[in-house]
Amino acid sequence: MTGTRSNNTPFWLLLIGLFLILVSKSLLTEGMFLDGVTYACISRNMACGLGSFCNPCYTQTIGPVFHSHPPLAFGLEALFFKVLGDHWWVEKAYSVLTFLFSGLLIVLIWKRSTNNIRWAWLPLLFWLAMPLVTWCATNNMLENTMSVFVLLSVYLMIVSYQRNNKIWLVLSAMALFLAFLSKGFTGLFPLVFPVSYCAFDQKRKWIQGPIDSLILLVSVAFFVGVLFLIFPRLFAYLKDYIQLQVLDGGLHETTVSSRFYIVFALLQQLMIPLVLVVVSVILKKKNKFNKKVFEFPPDKAWFYSFLILGLLGVLPIMVSVKQRDFYMLAALPFFALACGHITLSLLTLWLPRITPQVHRWMTLGASCIVLLGLVLNIVHVGKYGRDDALIEEVKQKIAEVGETSIIEISPEEYTQWAKHAYYMRYGKISLSPTHQNSPIDSRQPTSPRWNDMGESN
Image (cartoon, rainbow, N blue to C red; front, side, top):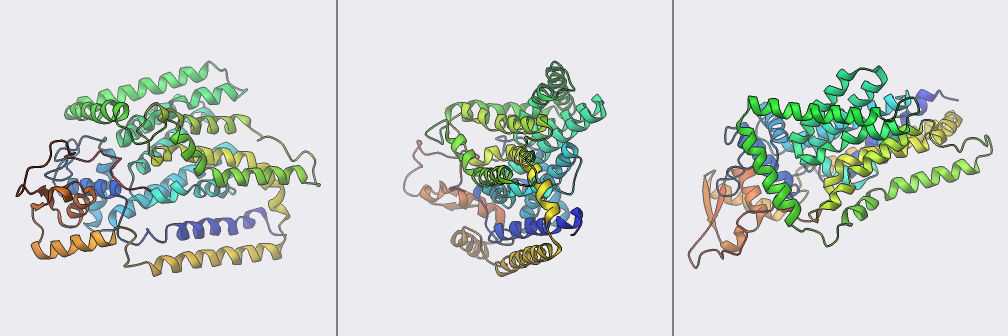
């Protein structure tokens, strides 16, 4: 029988292979979801001096001053462009790196909540089983950056409780502040984590939860105040963001027919993890080796805290009828952690029973999956992941006119927002409507609704 440590090798290989397979059509190919291309343009522009951290710029005709989202994610990605240069793959490298950092933080949170890092592949497997996760990993969404800081904030809260030191709680507030600067108010839902954890942890008084949440809130407000003192122009920036996205967008724009859309979208994401959990529960009940094996998670506080935190990262979205699937990305790791905790007892029973022969076959099979993933990615090198016709059109036009400031297109084409994104991304070209026949109908939108521009995922 192999040791418990070595028994985990096939599962880590399986994770790597599954990830490579799931992203094979988008990782090393050109083309990206419209929002991701837009954010890449803004970040690249910032890196080359067109726009600034306090006043990002999209194009000269659409969003010359882009205040529709907070600037931190743009600023961080701009650093990648400064270091790596202006290549089509830079935004994908940044996007994948945020995915990897999120995965690392899930592992660290798992270690803190179970005291065992060897089985950290379990929550990662549940996380990877959610289709939205790998889709966002290569599409440069702002939620990617926000997720890193959300997970970091929760990790630091856990460290604060385990070390009984409020300094870590203040550092957690700093991470929440950075999450807010990445995507706005949707990054602040971990403020409730102390309440849920202290409510279920028998070692702590329930009143400590609300007190710690208040400390977090006050600390975040303090960091916002300090930011305004250092960068006073950001006050006007965030004021515009609140007006454009929270008040005008969140309260008045409609992208779904029902407020329950996000709930059904969540159930779709959790379909595979829930099936795996149900199967594990059935296996526990049928186990003949130990009748006590079907037990709730050893530490219920962790399971309930992660589950509630995930729900609170999704359900408040129902307040608005402006909803998209990727709004809930930062909440999905906590569902994965909850699923991991509820299936952990089966793992501790089953894993040590793997024989050396079975282990070798599992390792071989997982290695084949990794190899398949590598082959699929290599096969797609040099191809387009999406928008191939449009990208070819843009490249051909740039070859004819060169990189210039503004070119004219028809009023009908002007409202094809993907054209604006790719022309700016590949040629630093802004688009303007022609007025040969008649001016643009004043009822037509003259700028896209940010975060609701693109096609379906």
